[in-house]
Image 1: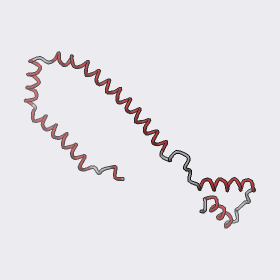
Image 2 (image 1 turned 90 degrees about the vertical axis):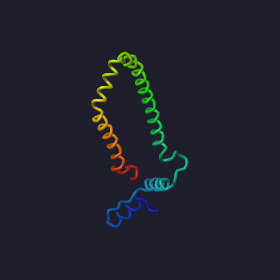
Image 3 (image 1 turned 180 degrees about the vertical axis):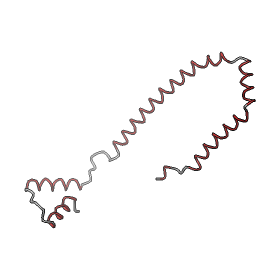
Image 4 (image 1 turned 135 degrees about the vertical axis):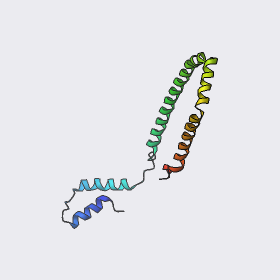
Length: 130
């Protein structure tokens, strides 16, 4: 099997720009060529470092997600009593009247959000096919 070095030497000889390599250097180059052509079964696979990096990133992402979930839980616990304090009969009746008065606008907005989400899934091609 021709290596890049052997091909480049032949090209240099054809164009008369070849310089002789000392014997010690020639032995080193030959040793390197022989060992680069061999498949190394003793080391880790080529994707090993990528797998390790991906696992570390996933672990860091899980830690971050747990922190965010704790923060959300604390905020919900703090805001629940505040929201319950607002629940009076006047507040509920006012909220119900606003919803009834603007029911068509609310239904229109909800349907638009749903249609936009469905449209994005139907129109955009899947990006994982490449």
